[in-house]
Length: 106
Image (cartoon, rainbow, N blue to C red):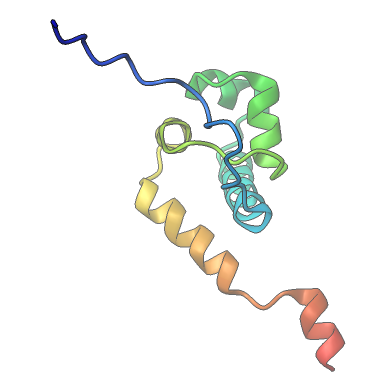
């Protein structure tokens, strides 16, 4: 029986995947938004520069979508930023104490 070639990988998240983390998505979106604003780039122009659909890019900035690594690389490239630096900023943001939690502790 002849072997069949491997099918090409499927795009998108596998059905039933639950890898979304709202805190990570919000931190990444906030860091990207700060970088875009600091560069004086509109959201629409940034989406175009990153070759990402505009409404999807908006959801990323609002923390409603968690981009794949490929999209993260495209956004970092469009920002002219090193991906390691962006990830480091996201990690730092995630380590900061939650303001609501800190206020309850007082």
